[in-house]
Length: 377
Image 1 (spheres, rainbow, N blue to C red):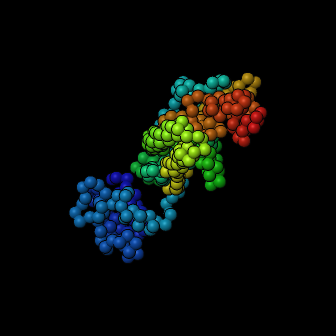
Image 2: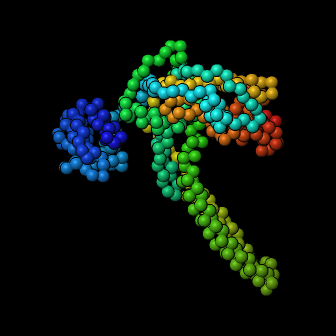
Image 3: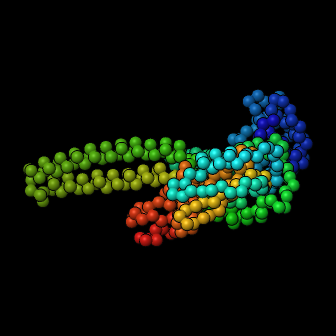
């Protein structure tokens, strides 16, 4: 059964309809009167979801108006899921953890030591957003982000296998041992704070191909503008030079050519400003769905050493993506290839946020000083 057909089937069942899967890739629906009116369906209807439809069926796709009607019927329900799931799998050994950390935790100015490796539970927050980017063209996309609520580590690679498990096995509620529980779930305020820091960079990354194409088109248009107005300016300058040779500076012809040069420069600036407005991008971000899922993990204690300072962090390996969660920059939220550690609070940041000030050239930590360089402001 396709994901779309499965989703629609469950939604209709919740609304009181009697639903039966049929082939190829369709369902039969016996709907109550209120649902029939909302969806504009007969009492008995067939819905098709694949390239080949069952006989006498209505095609349903993500782009069809029918999905908008179903969305209105749901009235915002089904946007949040909370579950606890367990997967039986062999945990990685200490040598495996060391190999994964060697790839994930590359410190440019510090070192680390691995401590205790133990089993535990953590809670992952998965949030899906609908992105609409509008410039000279329009682009829509779905962005899914995942964060480990225990240590704020990024786990975007967990999204697909986690939802595959939920789609196949449904929502489960495994028993969580009290001794290794995931703690209290994040509040909505804490989730908004995390999204405010981490979402902008992820949106820029997802829209990078769209931005690249837009910048190339804008560059070509600016080159054409520059070439055109440069030609006009050269012609006006040539005429002014001829007028200056033939007539005194206060002659009407000289003033006319000078005014023409100024007009060309003004028109060029106005057209460049119009071009900037044409290619300015607006991005709308709409929450689609969120889930808090408790999962058993293999937790590794890591002590980060910088000069005389020591900081203890924890890295989790989960059995769904089968990899370590990635540590984000503690200033901008990006996941870099390597990290730097600050002297003041041992923040682990990307080299940009822990690098030199662009004005005075002194090193400072953007996580310690989010307002800017403490030396030059």
